[in-house]
Image 1 (tube, rainbow, N blue to C red):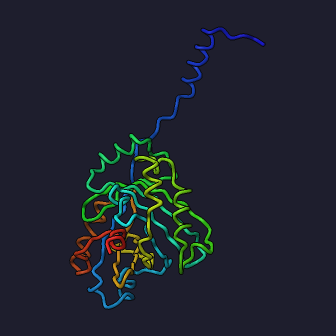
Image 2: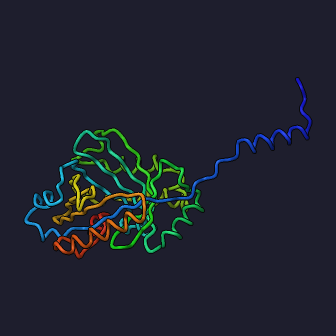
Image 3: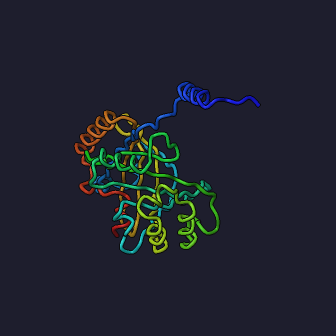
Length: 264
């Protein structure tokens, strides 16, 4: 076997690295989701809402959130959500980290320090835009075939918690301290289910998702759309706010869907 000198090996390594430079991790560039709640009292009934936004029915979904009785996870910006579809669509669980009260710049800096970057296709980075306020979030969704323990009519709570434990991504469960995370997850209870009726429609020339959620006798409706650029989000939010306000369709209560369920 031909030997390579130490100097020769260093030279080879230099030119190899020059020819194939390490790929730099792309900085996080979140998309935008503009969300606004509708004033349901301004419509004669639910069908009137659907027709107003030229919407067609998509799915009926039961939505659960899992947290401790005193909501330790929510206090630290962790959201655990379970969705079960009325159709034969796959069940999914979502792990979400939110940064309420933190600027998007500072939240992204914190996420970057934790090893997150834009090339992670299994995570979604987003600015949730509501009334001019952007809240940065990181989420990851895992999907599963429906089974007898998680059905549209009922769920096995212990099985659901076990699923959240088994599928929790490392970067999520170790954001703080893993022992704390696992112990806290063991103490969670379900909040919900809320019935979410989802529709695909449009408003002022923009494709929009319409969701009508019902829980414990109360109902909220939200229209939303997702765009890639801040300028798009600014324009859509401004036109939607003006249009909804002028028509009397904008709700004074702009609570999140998470809060709608977990605050009851």
